[in-house]
Length: 123
Length: 141
Image (tube, rainbow over all chains, first blue to last red):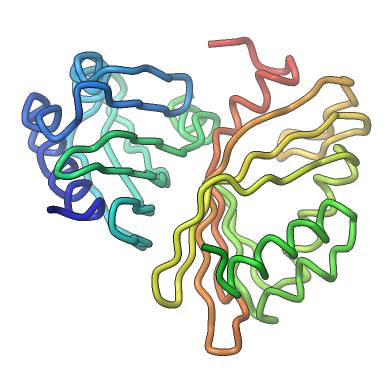
């Protein structure tokens, strides 16, 4: 059985490779996903949501700042950077993913990041 | 299971909600680094001033720890933060007059503790845009 931190790492690797279906395969069908301005149930909604990031941004860069994990729950603190395709602007932001798993599936993903500071870099 | 560290975190928040800022800052090392989204505060006095600014604008601010994970010298949790905006709130863009509106949002807190049980770093991440939306300052997205 994979720990939450390992599943989250696999998920991120697939996301950065733009393998969104691969990322979705790590999610339970009844995944609960929450983030700034988004809250949905169901892994089927994951790919359309994630696709918007790859449509609007490229050249993603991820730095793991810390991991606090205990079996089936983990907090992953990240520093992210990406280039906004429309403006060419490079944006940097911090996020924390709180990931919960059951067996080898992600059942809950809660992303904490600030849209105000993020969007301000694109203004 | 409630560990000694978790109880210390919960007690610090209880103190904070009672406006006992020392109860909160006592959990932190003198040189603790505090990050809130994009901003960094060096030292617990700088952190205390920032937190008091929030309580000045939201005197009934409350913190409820929802999920808690401990991992060696680290701990992290989800905290629900709620309160009523009854006095001006200082922001980088200037003071926002009291709106009388409620805020209610969730944040992720991540802390590292030294061998004495004091936090040497404490980072909090949340969606400030959601807070501004709840205050009616930013349009709902």
